[in-house]
Image 1 (tube, rainbow, N blue to C red):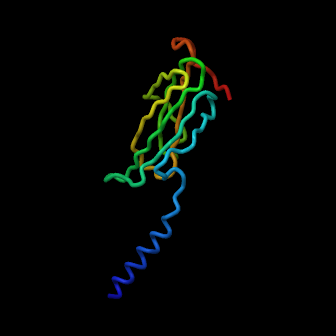
Image 2: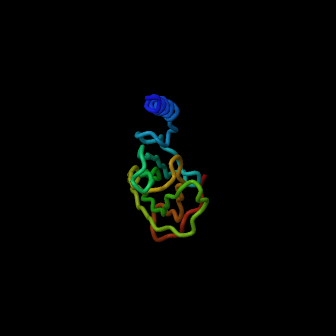
Image 3: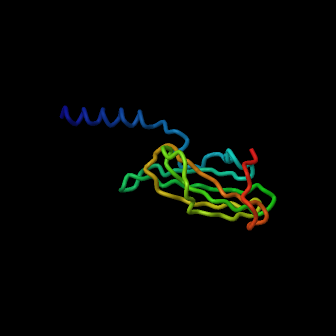
Length: 133
């Protein structure tokens, strides 16, 4: 009986401690954020509330193009402890105002890094643009 009461108290305490979750753990999309390098590329994120059987969380990322022309860019989604990437394997081409949603599984629970590079606006065979922010 004492063990049962102890377990109930422990479960109640853990429920109270875990009831406050940071924005990245909510089931709703985050607010739109603009890339820190490219003023016309926005993104928002959403993370599943529970990890899968491998302990990984499903992260969804929605990209939006605010440039007036077609925008092509490469991107990578990585855990927060990854500070940079040298190889990009994902590429998007979005028309003005167009959105695209993608997802990945990461062992990161609270934050992810979104890397954007190799951006072209307008002519998709021209040179990559420099940061405009």
